Length: 316
Image 1: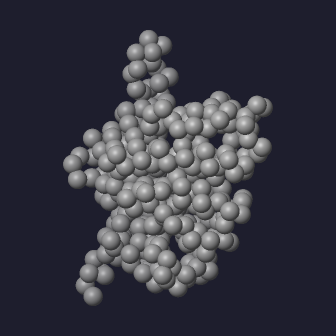
Image 2: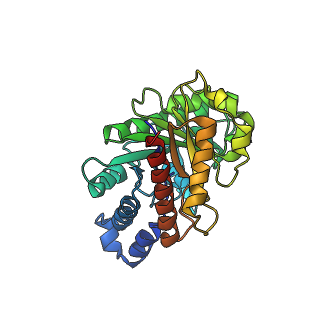
Image 3: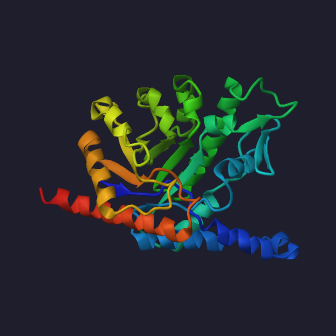
């Protein structure tokens, strides 16, 4: 596939929707008027302007945990916290396919859109267990299995909605024994026939080789901008024979400083030295916490640096 630029997901245009919602009347909201449509359009437009190959809908409605907790039966989201309240079952309808469809509409024919789901381990670990819920703990095998099945429904719906690729977010893997969690992640994306990327947290890499055992994941995220030491610890040899590639983080999403093209180019080149040139390149994480202008400039630098690297590679 070669080098493909993409976002991790969240983009700071959520503020547009939040401001719009605050100004809407109760009648407008009850009538189903959607204040976040403009947020999705703005996120898509910015990514297209920057030249990103594989874009997202911007994850503009809420943080990823709250969004999925609000849509899965047996869970609820309240005041920014998520709860497991009963037996987890399959959602009655897709949680995010509508936004992916809107993103495809704004991006135009031929654009590549990525669907994004929260992983079962992160969703369980980030939620509180309410009294009366039929699970013994947040890491009850039955709970993780039920969440994986519920999320598999969402993954299937995103494929049906036309997603070019799928990302599964599991930033809490570093808190648990990774080896015991692989089956739940695989279940969530089982039989997905489009490329699947796992977005873990950097600290997960103390058990990195365990992640390579995932059966249904094609790309594994490496946050190399904030943690360049990962490119010293990880080796391309670990990938031999496992049919996995890297989604390399080359933009620091914690800092408002916009890196130079040369800095990002060197990060990509170092990634190629380690893993080869069949990779995705992206920011380390979502850009939601930056201003819209900073987020856009970071994406533009990402694309420009990747374009220069691809041009140089084509000359050999």
